[in-house]
Image (tube, rainbow over all chains, first blue to last red; front, side, top):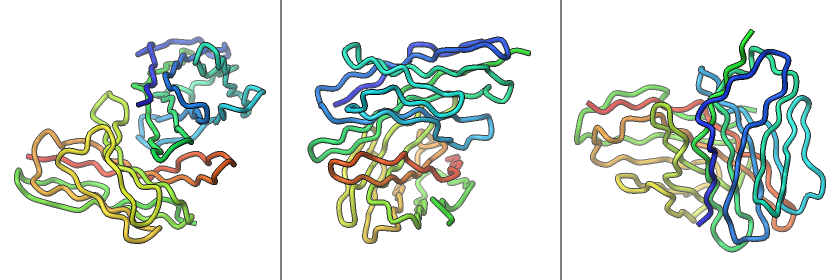
Length: 116
Length: 116
C-alpha cells in the first residue's frame, strides 16, 4: 500500500516570504499522481496543484509550485509571497494509477500560519 | 453545476442508531471516495469506488458500508453508531482516464456527525 508522509505538523512564515511544505511518499508503482489541498478553518477542501509521475516539469499554479524529486520520492509544495489568507491546513495526497486499486491517500497535514 | 453534494451537513446520533450519509455528484466522475477527519487530523479513507457496482475498502472501513448503484450516488451507511464514529465525513469524486491521468478530487462540504 502507498504511504504519504508530512513531517511538519506546524509551520510559520512571515507575510510576503516563501515557504516550503514537505511531502514524501512511498510506492512501488510507476504511475501515480500527487496532489496538494488546502483546508482553511471553515473546513472545505480546496485543490491547489497536481503533479503526474511522468510529468517532466514541475507543476506550477500561480503562487504555488510543486518541487517534484522523483528519485527521492518527494513532492514539496512551495508557496511564494505568502499572504495572510494562506493560513490553513495543507494536505499532500497520492493516487496510484496502475493495477485495480485507486486509493487516494492523504498525509497528516501541515498547519501553516502566516504572520503579519 | 452543483459538484459534490453531501447531506446532511450536521447530525447527532444516539449510540446504536443507524443512518445514511448521502453523496451525489453531477460531473459524471467514475471515482468516488468517503473519508473521515477527526479533529486536528488528516483524512482517512473509509471506502472508495471506481465505478457503478464496484466498491472497495479503504484504511478504516469497520462500522461502515457503501453501495454504488449509479455513477452519481455513493451513500455511506453507519449501522450501529458508536462514539468513535464522531467525526467530519467528506465525500469526494474524481475522473480518471486510462493512460491519460487523473483530475483532482472534488470534495463535498462535509457532514459533521456526533454520536452521543
